[in-house]
Image (tube, rainbow, N blue to C red; front, side, top):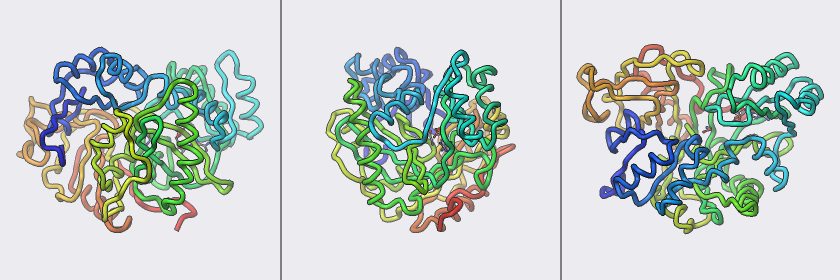
Length: 421
Ligand code: AMP
Ligand code: GLY
């Protein structure tokens, strides 16, 4: 690990990228007993629980019960992400600014539909549970809103995650993601970022898990971060502690800066993807120390230091078909020729030992065998710079050298949203 040559990393299950610097073990991230066994096997000093599904499955609880230090909240505290109705209720109780909302189920949808009608369909329909970032439909009229509610409650588009539905007033404004590492009492705020949620340029098409990210979003200065801490993050961790479910790990607030002030759209109980890919490279602090401090209860409060080159832009390269069913198994080429200043974060990639990749399987890309696509979002290419413009240009130049069949990406990552600059 950078800065920690003596640290060994084991990933469950890892991917084609982690294979280059860590040991991948065939254990699902959301299998509590499997993760505890893998941690014991390698005598782990810290388990970092990354994905939402793993937190919701109680992997952090299982590690704590086994006496293993862990970064990540308990299943109960992670409800701030795994149940949108829980999160909305907590926001109202704690006085955290959020959009007007209502909720309902297939057999009890009166209040839900009343709000849809009152808003004339200009609303956002959300599956209550985890849906890989795709459970949100932004609607402009009654037909679309009724259809979105029906798709969840009757069509079961998101399975059990959509058994309960939330409807919210549709807000307008630029978005901001603020991530903070916390030990449940102290908050250390990471550099602010923005996620590009829609599949298409100019924020068109359906929502995805995120098609790119940038830091810093225009106007997101330290004064704004301090307001987010005071009005959003602090009340959130205090309310969770008051419920007897203290939150430690990474608390993520997705915020919209509306003409009427900031409103929280969602909380996540983990590092945001792809925000983290741009936030960590410009962090001028020891990331491992931050993770350990969260687990140990010794987080030092404040705003984390940023590197001199404090702008970063990350473009997600996704497989054909995403955010629907992605095409898998295509060979990815060009990573070995990437400019060394560019970071390539792997998501859905795997090494295929049975086939050779045209002469580029070793070296920078690491590992043996062809690197293949293995799901929707495949890679994030990240460039850093003194300005967003410089970072954006470098990221797009770099991606010209990467290829896989059907590769799709947005052309406007790093650029301002409507009404900015
Ligand atoms: P969520 O997963 O709840 O953050 O929603 C995903 C995305 O949907 C957000 O990043 C926004 O782009 C959009 N969204 C969510 N809630 C609202 C809202 N109340 N008004 C407008 N857009 C929203
Ligand atoms: N970028 C949003 C998320 O990680 O859910």
